[in-house]
Length: 326
Image (cartoon, rainbow, N blue to C red; front, side, top):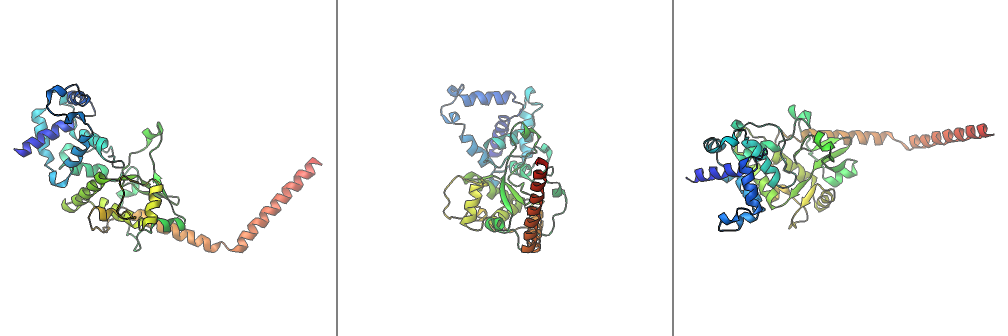
């Protein structure tokens, strides 16, 4: 009986976030605006911010129910106005509305028949976008033994760490959406999307990592992300630098100066052999090695010769100008 009640609630909650704005969406809009308060004895419907707590509670691993039961209930309860409703689109619209910043979902189509539960739908929607990184479709290279250096060490080696940002409108319409997992490296810059670090985001990371451990066939992208960020964030100096760069948007005062995602998620996870961040780590190591070789070839004599050639060129140009004027 509880499964039936929960399924009916999930159906109505998803229809509330129908992107096509059907009859159920209009009803919930009026309810949030207070036009239907006389039908209820409590005032909980006047506080829409509470629905974010409901959405996060629906994504806990222990609260998952088979999505096939939600689909069956929807087929029984739907009206003429709901024939074109896509439950996965409703769920992803709900994710984008209530989940913390940085956990926006992609637009890659996912069929209802392929969804096991809401948490699995969120997980698939957060996976790195193959359109943004074409090498995601290739087997990942073997990660370097040293992993990734801390942020301060990378900066001293000439690798710049910046926040990956959305383009301004109207250019944003031509940019592929990305989640907090889409970390890129190009031209000496590691670009990391912003992650809101709050109680809600830590709770979601906990459940996503637990989902990776429990469900057969799931990758280890979230666990590898947590390990990658903890390697970057080795001490409080690295934490402060990542905060100033806007990569970590910390919504609470941490007990420790450094911010360890794995410690806060209470998950002892190590990078897997198929680490999707291996390509970034290998590219960073190759860039540092190439930069070190260039520094070795740049001798003081070569620098002196450069300034000597520059001075002679400037003298010739000045002499030519003086000759033309005179």
